[in-house]
Image (cartoon, rainbow, N blue to C red; front, side, top):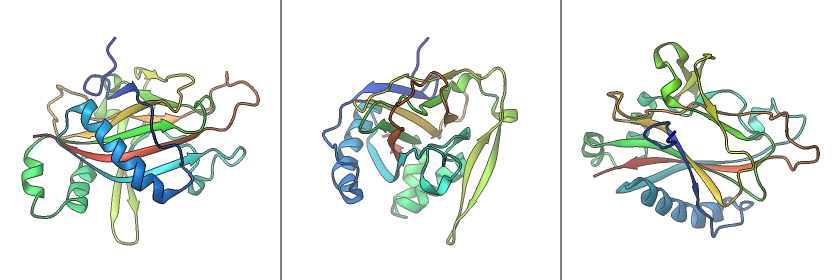
Length: 221
């Protein structure tokens, strides 16, 4: 069965990075962002990619419930609703360009990569979009910030949902995760529920998971 951005909502690739230093946030923005923009363009055919933030996660054993510490996110979610995606376009692009950009296809796509060692501990699971009933399985979640409100998508359990993960994913591998798509007619995947999970088969002594995720606005001509 095909796993792709437009069928399942996510896709794995072998894409080694030249950037190895994920301790320095400024270096991540300076060096890893440009490389990743080119990767996303090449893999999707997009004409323009705008990275608007990133998160580096390092699991701290025993503190999995401390979300503020940027632990792996163990709740099933989608990073943005479509409403929030449109708001992101307005927020991150010049106002004069927004009307034209919204006339064409646009998406939010995350680029997720293990760093420093394979992601065996608390790996990332992704749900096949085709197995999700958006009307009954999903609900909006408001995130309140000092200057604005954001909106993510919560996901309820449904036994029909089909989940996949790539065991032992290495730093030379990435997964692109579609969080939103302006094509809303059902012909393509529009979002991908995902979560970290505690894999009971993880060998004792496995290094705690470390990863980086980039969030991007993706535009097409």
